Image 1 (cartoon, rainbow, N blue to C red):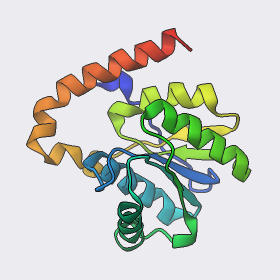
Image 2 (image 1 turned 30 degrees about the vertical axis):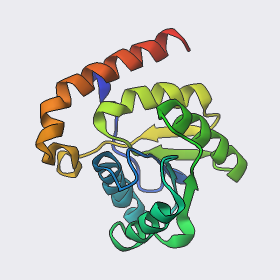
Image 3 (image 1 turned 120 degrees about the horizontal axis):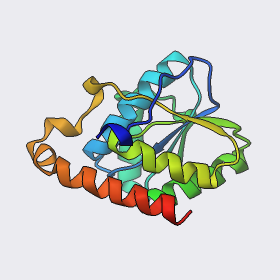
Image 4 (image 1 turned 90 degrees about the vertical axis):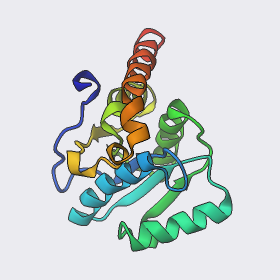
Length: 171
């Protein structure tokens, strides 16, 4: 999996915003691990947290906001939703557009290790500012806690390689 992992340690004062591509609105395990990472960065320096998840109904979004405040300790005024995105490419496109509208010049992308390279490729395609991909520690990996995920991980990683290759070829 190592070629897919491009995350790096982030300087405490870097970035005007934290970008979190969603992976389920329950929240899904992928979204949980991404929010674990975002929260660890947010605790060092508060900044806007933009979550891109188009599958949330309004009631789910309200419940999700409560979790983001109580569990991950984000201030309500720092939470911004992109609800137009339904896949990774749309996540990166809409996050970029939203950041441009908000005047955000630099951002930190918080996503799962297997998802980092493809997100970086796509964000490079759409983003006009500066960004870094944050490194996720193994202790934050929520998905590994579920046996179904562990059993399907090889398939998921292969899928990421194929999608990343596609993005490189068709940029």
